[in-house]
Structure formats: structure tokens, C-alpha cells
Amino acid sequence: MGNKANDEMGLLLITINKLAETLKRIMGEINDVSDKVSASARVVAENSKTSLCQIDDQLDESQKIATMAEELATTSSNMEQSSQHARQLANDAVSKSNESTAFVSATMHQSMTLPMNLKAQLL
Image (cartoon, rainbow, N blue to C red):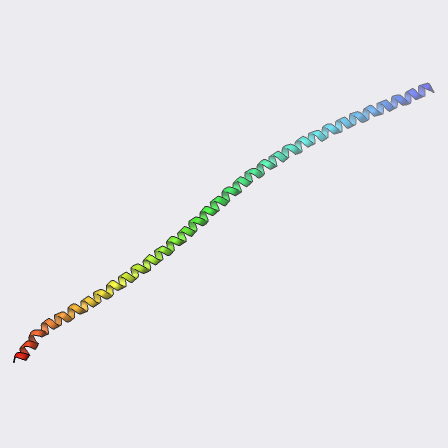
């Protein structure tokens, strides 16, 4: 019976050693996978950071474009107002020119008819 106990103890020790080796191998694999997951997480974090910077840049560019569009709209509105003012000034100038032409024409007519009127009155 002494040998049988030793054999059983020997088998138990062999089985425990195999279990320890298997656990050691599994722990090593878990450690490797954990390192790979950690490295992948760092890559994802870096990519996210890069994407966030690119999104911020795009947002800045979009805001610049919006500002330029507003400035363009303001400039266009100012140009339209200036154009309307210039049109009004041109219309006023045409009106004054017409008035002046009419005045000159009337004055010339009077100056031509004045001697005839004077002559008629003297006779």
C-alpha cells in the first residue's frame, strides 16, 4: 500500500505540475492579448485625437467661410445701396439738365420775341 500511495502522490504531483504549466501558458496568452488590446486602444485613441483635430480644423474653416459669406452679403448690400444712390443722382442730374434746357430755350425764345414786342409797342 505504501507504493500505491506514492504512485498516487506522484500522479497527483504530475497532474498539478501540468495544471500549473497550463495556467502559466494561459496567463502568458492573456498577457499577450492584453498587450495587443492595449496597443490597439492607443492606436484608436491617437486616431480619435487626430480626427478631433481635423474636425476642429474643418469647423474653423467653416466658420471662416460663413464669416466671408456674411461680409460678401454686406458688401453686396452696400454696393446695391450705392448703385441706387448713384441712379438717383443720375436721375436728378437728367432732371436738372432738362430744366436747364427748358430755361435756356425759354430765355432764347423771349430774347428773340422781345425786339418784336418792343417794335410792336413803339408803333
